[in-house]
Length: 427
Image (cartoon, rainbow, N blue to C red; front, top):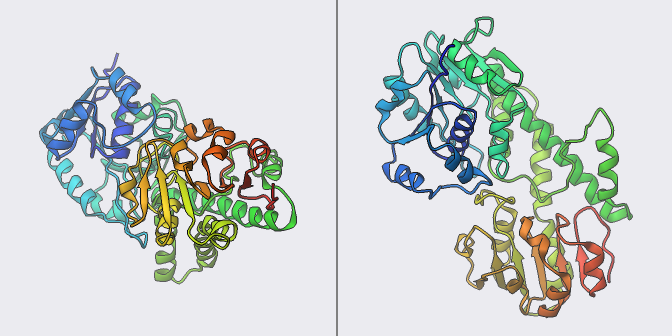
C-alpha cells in the first residue's frame, strides 16, 4: 500500500489552522509551520489565536498527527505544502500580498523538488502564474473558509477547485491522494480561472444578499414579511434550499468586500462593466445603517439622553472578527450617547467609545436601557427571556435584525419589537 503523503501548512492564522486540523482529522501527518515562535508556543498549549467552533477539540483529538513548528526546515518532510496564511485587507478592499510572497519564498527554499506547493490563501487573478516559473509543481486551490463554520467546511468540502499551469496535465500523485481522501469532486483549471472562480462564488453570494436586503426593506414598507417569502424562494429549484436569502446589515468580514473591490479594479483596468457590482456595494452601505435609522426613529428622537444596549460586536456569530462589523459602525455613530455593550468573545475595548460600559453578561446590558439592539446573532442570545429583559429595561424598544428572539414573546411582554424584513407594528 502506498503510504499517505505528509502535508504541510505554512501560516497558522485562521485559514491555516482550520485546514491543518482537517487534514490531520482525515488521517494525514501534518506539519504546521509559522515563523512566529510565540504564536507556535501559544497554539501548542491550546491558546488559539482565533475563535472557531470545534477547532480546539479537533486539534486535541489529532495531536499525534499534528506537528507545530517555527522551523521552516520541517517543511522539507512534506509531499504537499499549502501556503495558507490569511490575507489582510485594508478599508478599500485592497489585499496585502507581501506576507504571502514571503511565505512562498520560505516554502520554495525548503520544499523538495518533487513536492507540490499549493497557494490556498486568496490571491487575485495573475498572482499564481507570476510566481510559477515553469509552474509544474505550483498550484492554486480555492479556499472554502466560512467564519463560524470553518472546521466543518474544511472537513467536508463541496468540491476542490485547483488552478494549474496546465489543467490537462495530471495532478501530482501526492496532491491527488490528499484531495481524493475528502471524497468530493476535483476541478482542475488554469490558474486565472481558479483565482477568478473564488471571486465569482462570492459575487453570486453578494447578489443573493443584495436581493434579500432590497426586497426585505420593501417588505417593511408594504406590510409583507420577508421571513414568509424566503422559504418559498428556497423551494424554487433555480434558487435552491441553501440560497443566501436572510436579510442582513450589509456585507462584512472583509472577504466579500475584497472580491467586489477586485472586480471593480480589474473592470476599470480592462474596460469592462462593473456597474452591478458597484450597485451591490452601495446597497450594502445603505443597509448597514438600518439599525442606526431604526434606533433614531424609535428612541433617540423621543428621549433626550437615551441609554442604548448593544448585544454583539463581532461581525457575525462564532467568530472573534470585527472586520467591517455593523455593530462597530453603529457604536461609532452613537458617540454622544451612553452605551452598554456585551459580546461573548470580543471585549468592549474593541469598540472605542467615550460613554460605553462593558457588561459581564447579556442580561446586564438591559439594565436601565431605553433600547437594546442585538447586532450579532450569537446562539447564547437566543436564550434571553423577553420578560426578564423588559423588567430590567427603562424603555421598551428591542431591535433584533436577525430575529434572534421570539417576536410574539417580546410583544407579549410589552416590548416594541423590530426586525429586518417586517413592517413596524407597535405593541
